[in-house]
Length: 545
Image (cartoon, rainbow, N blue to C red; front, side, top):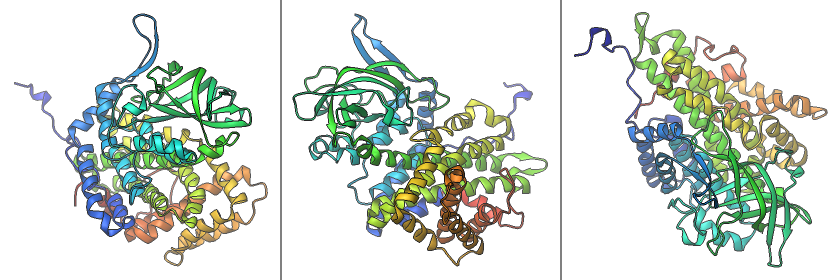
């Protein structure tokens, strides 16, 4: 019999056994909005299955165990032979296998594929974000490979397969493969044009031997990698398999795994090439141009991944406040806590709506939509990923001391939060990329302005923000020093325009009043008290409607 002092009361139950998709109104509405009617029933059914799995106790255990048992590097076998293998806990493989079987690497030729995949990625990575890296790289490699039709014909069916097979074997012997990426080097980082890895052509058409290093190699257990190296004509993109067609291991020496702040269930490595066989993808000297579409697609996944972290954080915060009592009442009914929760919910919904709009632009694939993506993706990547860390930190605080304890799952979310802002180009890189599009691609700016202009006249604060943005865009002289300010404003105006068009009035009103109208403090929980905050919080509550 337990001592009376051990009686537990006033603790929120764990948020388990719910449908992560169906409980997210912003996401379900986005799927309904962006998919053609004939695809909706099948898409919803698949997303509900995935949502129930993501919200299950089993998936939560997989995520926790994968993080408690991070990957281990095994460089040699017992006899001293070099093997360079990364070993993962079985929970990692279950997470990854479930994701692949749900089609999270299959979007490019699937009707409504990008919207369906983005929604699934947002749902499933709430169980554990770390395994999102190989999913993202494998999905994003398709447009780069398509620059070489023969290579695409061989590899694309394996990349988009719904079958996950772990272990290193020739790609032709597997029903599905994963693909990683290696671009950055010690001396250059984001400045990939300073790469020193050499590519020496062989007699076989498109075949080379690579010698050099990669400071960050993503998903080093993958079956193949897209890498950049200096060929005779300049920086070039290559496809580098781990196992050669004859079954022998390609030279791929993993020097160490990075000891990272978060994302601990995922492996990131330093690797060395020494006469490593690779196949050229695209033309010599056009490596950046070849791989840039892959980079853009992974940047969108950074936005989606941040939206997933935000959604899980706000779901946990609202759930806790719904059950926790303090100072004579339930926390969620306290005006100040309600203000905090509503503010967090706004940030989460704005991120979700923007991410899904970008995915829909990929599905549309028109000239104007692709031009819109050229400027909207780096702007969204800049802003949404930067908002993730303070937002998750505030959500953790809503749980008080419970949120600071590992068992709550909130510390894992907080450690993961800065990642997407760093990967695929940090904030300055994104801001400079937006400037580059503004200066060199007028069609991109026209498409962006056309998109935000669809909401003109619906809210006076949005109209004023658009006008101010146009004034700032009119003067590009010496703009680099104020690039962050400009890109932040562009992202907020875009989010505001989407919410005004598609979100409930109470959500759009609160967003425009705070983010665009200036009636906001410096931290979350400083929304105008006259807004309908209760409705905003209720909309974010993780229950199925």
